[in-house]
Image (cartoon, rainbow, N blue to C red; front, side, top):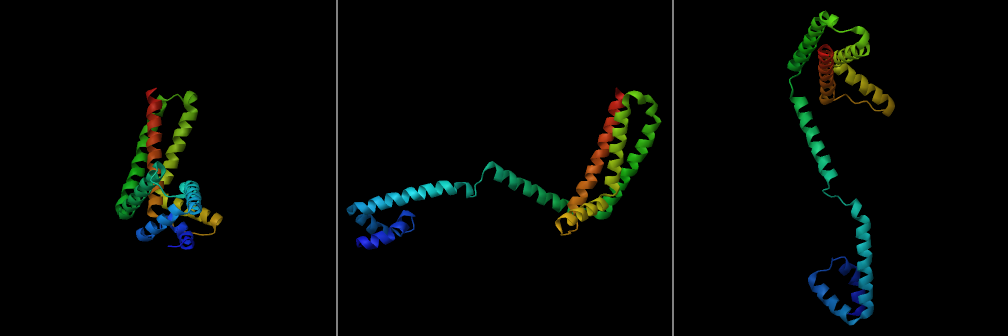
Length: 191
């Protein structure tokens, strides 16, 4: 191999892309010619600097990446559960839940005399508000999800029908709101 051929192959060798036979020939020429050794050292230094500069762009299995993968997996599973849930059975359950919550509220209002309204007015109104919001979310989750999709469409100029998971999330939020209101009520009664 001539010095000129070695100079042409030097970048490939520095990048580790030269096959073993040609690399052996090149190494023999580099050992004889100090100018080629200097060029090779400069190329390796440039490669090291470039690798260091590009390292943040390389995909890694950092904690953030693993967390993002786990969150994606949870979302995929939640979508599967939401899509496989029988619509009619869920509707019966959530409407029964709302009906039971209203019955519980009526029964609890009979014991409202236990609470001193002057001391707990803000807490009572907060509890009532949370309860009413919960009822609206449980009974009208689908309507609220479509309304939200229309508001987002007005801003982003692209309407997409809400997924079953989005509707289910709103309805479950409503159920949790009712549980929070009932918990607040029993906390106030117990005081």
